[in-house]
Length: 280
Ligand SMILES: [Zn+2]
Image (cartoon, rainbow, N blue to C red; front, side, top):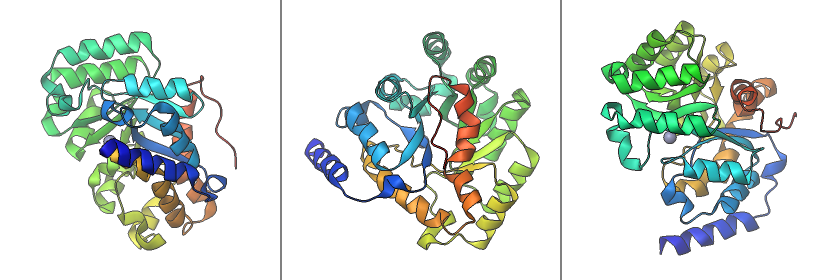
C-alpha cells in the first residue's frame, strides 16, 4: 500500500509543471537515503525529485551507507556523501558504546571518499566515550566535517577533542536563537543547518530574532529537509519552495548564502569529483 502511494506521489511530483527549478538554487544539507527509502524510491527517482526541487547539491547520508553510494553513482555532480556511524536504523541508540562501529567507519573510509561524518546522534558526556572519540579522530585524519545532532554540551566536548574540527550542528541543536548565537560566537568552525525547523520562516516572514542571527552570522547557516523517514522524500520539493519563500524576506545576498553558498563553501572543495554549483 505504501509502495503504491509512494509511486503515485513520485509520479505527481515528476509530472508537475512548476518553475521551481529556475529559481534560487538550494543546497539541501540534510538528506538521508536509508534502505527503507530506496526500496520504494529508486535512485533515479530520488535524484529526479532533487532536481525538480531545484536542489543543486545535497549532503546525503544513509544508515548502511549503500543508499548514499547509490545516489552518488546516479548523480556525482549533485550528491555529496556523508558517512553515518550506523549500519542500520537501530544503531542510532547504541552506536556510542559499540566498538564494531569503529571498524565499520574505518572500512568505509578506506573504500570511499566523503565530505562529512554523520549525521550522528550524540549527547552530553557520551561524546567522550571511546567510540565517538575514535570517530572524531578519523574525521580529523580524513578532514571531514562532523554533522552532529547534539546538545551544546556534546558540541563543546567535540571541540575540546579537536579544536580545529568543523562541525555542522544539525537542526541548530533545536535550540533558541540566543543559545545558537552564543555557540556561534564561541566557535568560528561551527555551522548550523535549519532542518526540521519552521521558526525561521513561518508564513514567509523571518522573525526579528532570526533575522538578527542570520545578519550577524551570514556565513554559518544552511537549509536542509531531513528525510529521516522515507515519506519525507516527497516533501523535498515543497521544502525547497517553502525555504525560497522565507529566504525572499531577506536581502538577496544573505538569502543566497543560506540557500546554497554557505554549504557549498564548506563542502564542495572537499569533494573534487563533483562539478561546481551553478553560479547565480
Ligand atoms: Zn537527520
